[in-house]
Image (cartoon, rainbow, N blue to C red):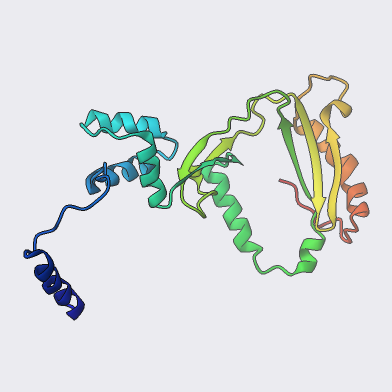
Length: 218
């Protein structure tokens, strides 16, 4: 035991004549350590839960606290409410493929990437709810999968587009409606190949890609 602790005990005995804890001033704490752990457990289990939902859950086990108190306990544990980041939904298979690609090309020199033309296509939703959701999380965890909202590619949009980019900048943006006579046409193998045939070489030349044999599309 530290000397300072012993000195404090003796001083307390001298001042009040006893060693028991005196009544602390101020309003007593509304939650116990067990309650605090339960609040954190609920948030870890479901980061999208609300203070109101936590309050209702606590009431079911006989604990009555306000939403403000619940938020304070979360803040004390470094949890804050944030709007979720919207990330493309990537399957486990594609995650594995992307990771393998990254490892394979990790040590490629800058000159290699200067000769790469990246292409992709997407379907843009013109009219949709942005679907913003609130999530309880700590700083630095914004991109954790459980803290993000997944967006699904080709999920009912109204305009399909193709584009490309390279180390030197962005290339053409092509809308499928401008490629096909049928305005209701969807992206398929024939349409995609037609776009590549018409766009790869002009864009590679515009972005100063030296070797046309080195381009990638995803």
